[in-house]
Length: 273
Image (cartoon, rainbow, N blue to C red):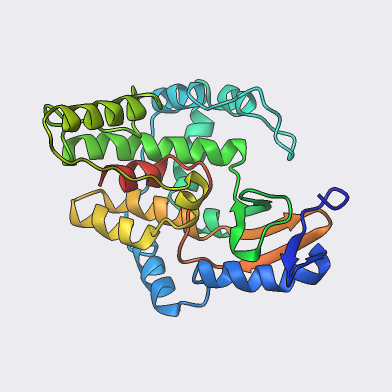
């Protein structure tokens, strides 16, 4: 760290944030395809279709509010998940507002998300090794959890689990289920003299590279409700994103690739499809 800021290596010399901010801006604008007009038009067409509003019930929102992770952690905007849970509890006015907000593209275009930068393996990374974290505020976590609950219900019908398979990234599964399943795969392949292989990806890179447009098209092709897909696309893609590192704030603009860090909604679909 340089003071309280990250720096990057630039031609074997450490550059300060003020010096490398324009390069970082160009890097992420290119990575997230901010200037791809064709993809942008396709994303907007999904959201601007004439669709009925979402219809979450008070009971649903009560349950969803109770499932938010780390509810006691205070966000830097002064709110926490517990505040959102209490606001949603048995509150018809909140339910009405929530259904209206989650169904309008204007909600997402007015949403400001300030991400932060970190090095993958070093506080002085190369430009290509920088990871952008786009955190969810407590209220945005509520939106994400609500949309994820509807997607999970749809995916369970569209992709029923068959005997002998394991599907992670869904309620009722644990992280350790995955390495246990991989260990059994390798053991059985060795016992039977057959070949087996598995792959892994960087979790931060996973969110960074989610193709929301492809996921949305797949959901619509499988018969997912149009208003649900539109809400997911708007939530992921139309917020105003900027990246901060110390005293520097880097405006990104409209993205056409990449999801918000930690999102449940599109991760369910991406990992199961």
